Length: 459
Image (cartoon, rainbow, N blue to C red; front, side, top):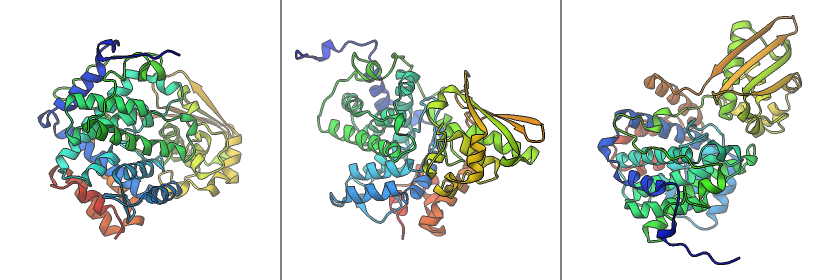
């Protein structure tokens, strides 16, 4: 195979999207980011800390912390733990921990979890150099936007082909957020995006295993690495998203240019964030809500059901349709089992519900045998309908759609604070948990963002 020589003049693609994105990352000013996106971003950071503190106790987190710790300590703290590692290794461990429970936020515009690759990289930087809370929050909002815009440029075909978008596009988002916080110029940022694209990887086939959150940790680590290397002068293609044999060309079915004008009269992507209140794959949430509603309205238990039909957008069939889960982790990706949990009245927001014991629960397994999952054509990605044919001859059904962002942001924060306390207090204790929450909610005003990682370590 012959050697191909490429230079900047030969970098032909459908647009200069990567460079335009880099310009937007650098040129978006603090005045372009209003109070509303800052409030939503604060909620996202609060939620991230809660699920990461809880996730720090998962076996995956123990394995990674121990393994990366063998390389020595460093300045970057681990959330929920007493030790610190190098910035890159801390980003890996914290990123994986934040996704270990699959309880972190999502955004329909990227078909993935936008926050988890970003915060670990920003925290690692904050532990390396002085960073104000305001700068941290702005870098998060800009990185989040870049992540979602990249997802839209490569389209749903990327996800449909089996790529884990949180890991792949998340690498680009982490690079964008890191580039912003590290103060890279537009050219350096374009190279950082290219270096991130060169490392973008992650497979949906790994869902239900420890590899899924591991991929997210790698996204945080690799995005931070990309920005750090670019700052020191390492180069890449500066059209890596859209060029021939680039991200869209090799990992999707097309390239779809987008307008990069968020801010001003246009909402930021973070304002469309969706938070989880069930500790399972988000595509199980609409069926869970439908089943909960049926139980509330008709006092139905699983053993009263002759046959259950669970209808979802057909895209969910390749994500969360484990027929018979063997472990608590696999429950999170089983439509049948999570619907059974909801009908039985079990708390699907309780982390302990997703246990190996419940995976083998006889009543839930029998309910699964009487259930059928059907994928339908729907414009609603998060569509969910549960139809129950009861043993007494009656039939009932309920349809839900959890893919709509909250319209009441203060109420959303109230729910997130309750979730935060529930998942963080067992690790940090009540006082420490409350202090951390107060600091996060004041993030836009605090002088030193590293206080967050310090407070997120046990006393």
